[in-house]
Amino acid sequence: MKKSLIIFLILFFLLLSSKICAQIDEPFKIPVIVIKYFPVDGDKIDKSITGDFSESLEFTRVKTDSLTQEIVQVLEKGSTYHGYKDSTALPSLKYKIIQEFEYLKPLPVFEKKGHNQPMTDYKKILERIDIKLWVEDEDVKEVWIWGYHGGVIDLWESNMSSPFGDVSNSDRNEEDLPIFEKTYTVYHYNYQRGLSEAVEDHMHQIEALLNNVDGRDTTSEDEWDRLLFWGKFVGSDKSHKIISSHCGWAHYPPNGESDYDWKNKNYIWTDIEDWNPEGTGEKIFINCDRWNSKSLDWFIYWMQNIPGRNNNISYNTKPLTNWWIFVGDYDYAKKSKIGLVIN
Image 1 (spheres, rainbow, N blue to C red):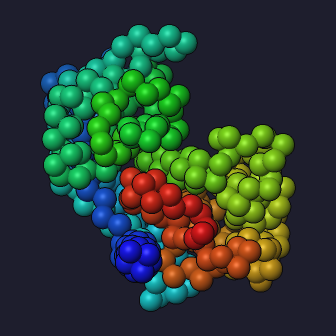
Image 2: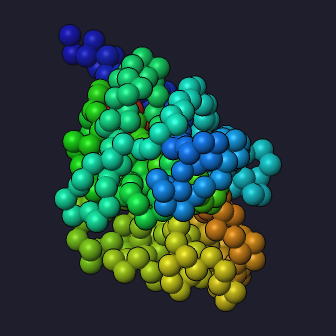
Image 3: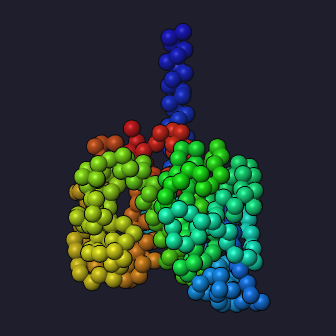
């Protein structure tokens, strides 16, 4: 009996280990639904509804379709570890648009306490397309909503529905989205803006996920600089500013001195391209020229430095996981208690 139990445990851990390796070695598939809200006045978008956008319906369709495909390309490229210098590197994420919905009417909204403008009613939007069917039967992991802002409505850049709780760039209200047995994340884009602004929604969601996995949500602010992601990878503390020139975050590159400081010409020594938690990586002397002084190029460059497939990085002798698993298969990561480091 004892021998059988030992054999069972060995086989179980081998199976678990092989599943984790498979998750790391194969790209995570992310089926996506796109929902577009185009309130129209004749053949043009109704500016009285959007607040700041009145292009033709045809122009708006072409723009959002083009941006949707570009977002896919950017996110896949961004998930390619050190892709800017390793031509053989493979992406950790693989996106597929599996269905699109278009409505020639305003976004549904409701009055939300504490908000000066009506709040987008995400629950109504998702119930309209029978989101339960798409999430549970088609394994949809993300919903991308094309809408507007214009100072006339409020929105969340990202909003998660999960049996494990809402980890997103929202107020994390557990009742504003239908919750099922599988996790999905809603992104709200603004077609008055461009590709960079849409991708930034994903940047902040990545930050929210990694901070949560790393324990920042339950760690005293005075201890944030010691955390693996926010302290050692980003190089920040409770101020959100860069205190150590490591990898930075969406608003702050390593040489950043204020929010959105993507065009900072000051040079700095940073280990961003050879980062490891011990701080022993080779440093390079760079400024904003490294990302062409562009926010979008900075986002891609930053993402490509997130420990991904075959990162070969260790912390206290333990290998780091592929951090993209928290974007690509959040449920598996939570159920398997996967962290930033393999225990």
